[in-house]
Length: 329
Ligand SMILES: C[S@@+](CC[C@H](N)C(=O)[O-])C[C@H]1O[C@@H](n2cnc3c(N)ncnc32)[C@H](O)[C@@H]1O
Image 1 (tube, rainbow, N blue to C red):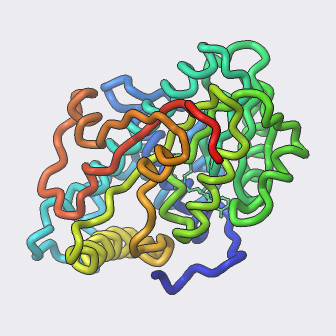
Image 2 (cartoon, rainbow, N blue to C red; image 1 turned 135 degrees about the vertical axis):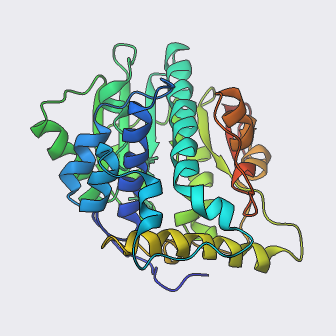
């Protein structure tokens, strides 16, 4: 388990788990400018600028490139067996955010074009889908995240003159608290089919909070509801400690490299490590019929360079989506 998290902890977009939402927006800003044309998020860069973390702004605008960070005077030396991935991991993370953004964009457009009129984006962060996707008329999009995150995004996008392309309903609540009541208060109707996403969220929840969240999503889902999330395979028995150490080492290296530029998010302290139920089989047992593709497969399908020396199993993460096929007991 992790040291720096506790029940009821809160954040803004420059601190703790909130900073991870800004990092993903950096990746979307860079992906938007890339030649591949896989992602178009015109709000990512202005949102990152507004957060005001200098290093992240310079990465988002392209003034700095991920490779430049290895040149930091007191950055780590790349000397371990995993140096290859450590060296290019920032680009890998940008590519991962690219295929992830495209996966969820397509999920939502497929669901709503098939008639699902209600969308819930859990842990929306700086996701601007409610402002940039071509939603069918009348689609209600609920964005759920911590109060300071929601308030910042709502205010900043209003100041930028952005207008939602759906009926956007912001729900400022912690997902470890009674979020279903907050969602219903905002107008959510559990009798209508819903398209749910939990993107980049589950690792920031303790294992039992993840189970509770997936149970609650299932309970609130009318037949025909859809869901998309990530599912990370547990390590082979006996490998868990080794894998956890490797992942922490990778995160430490990233944090250290960024720390040399006055931004140290201490990423390894934000995630809950240790065994947890794998989301995909857990959801299947509760009536969801899911299909999945690994990051590695999505890189190949989208023409992105394969992940080299992937000793932390980054490429094994599955993006899964599907429909609730039967009522749960
Ligand atoms: C890595 S970011 C992902 C944001 C967004 N889904 C994206 O992909 O751009 C993680 C997000 O989870 C949110 N989050 C994590 N734990 C949460 C909790 N207990 N309650 C509400 N939001 C939470 C954070 O505030 C942050 O916005």
